[in-house]
Image 1 (cartoon, rainbow, N blue to C red):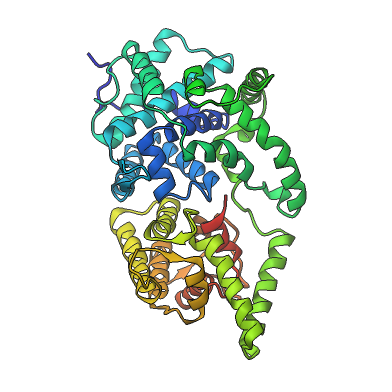
Image 2 (cartoon, rainbow, N blue to C red):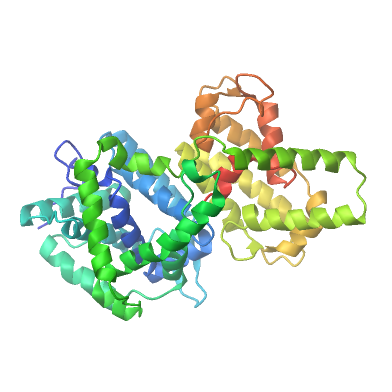
Length: 469
């Protein structure tokens, strides 16, 4: 008989999972779990075909942590709201992978595997940190993970009812279901290589790049060494000399930091804040000002052949850096849906607001298809976009901007104030962009969005929102 009542609130003061998930070291468990998730055929296909995982793996991982913390919130209303949002998001993700196998993000077996990997990785984190769980604590933690699944599914039946039944289930999937797919490679060799620079180093990109080049292989080795041996053998992962010692040192070091450093330094929100801009450094300021100057020159200078070629190159670069969210070299509906998902996640939109946003992006996609998709295959190439960028209609973008303004302007005062701006962009409010006032008017907000999304003007805020790691 199950120990878990899906209706029981186990995330109260005595919860084991909620405080663990609030610690920065839980990131080690989440990274490990994400890799095991991605090796599942359905999950790996969904990640590669419909998400920003290839181009922005860190943003995807960061959103996973944010969503998990909402699902573990002490307030049941916050948990229910996030579960509903995830269900809406997953309902939009289905298709067929390159081998002709169907995948569906609402598949209950795949969703159960996601929770199973989180449980196993959390147990592993505790064991490697010198905080091995006793039998009763481990059972309680497992019950909490089953409740975690029940929040989304309405039932926990796709996870074994008891802890003794869980381990054979977990081992069986590792041995017979997981595979070495493209998503696994992205996590191992691109996730840590794309960690965004912390604020103190954003003005020194060369220094951060050099440091990351050294740290990234070490982080990859630590993650590989922490995986189940059966999985590493199955997908032929390298067993590097000294990797296990390095891995154990990393976990122990994270545990010691959690115990002895100030709590404000070791909370997950402190770590996540390092990945969100606290304001522009000199490098971003120069880029923004240069973008404004370039836009002014283009407006004042007649477009000769050379300039036409430059506009094409600029449009092509914008296509690669912003529009091609899934990184497959062409523009498809999943790219625009990924932008809508990122905004909906950041603003924690309700169902009606989220639907308006997706419908606005769908209208823009229909507009782009009509203008660019000549063969009707549902794809727009980089070259097709670059050649026609200057002549594209803008009504779809204006509609998106209007909806985005509405969902950001939570107090309905027809301006985006500093707090609302930070909720969307995770960065400081810049009055110079708002024309010197105390907030963005609708017209100023729409103008900036359309200018950025048409590739005409650089915006560090929108770059952070739509292209960051």
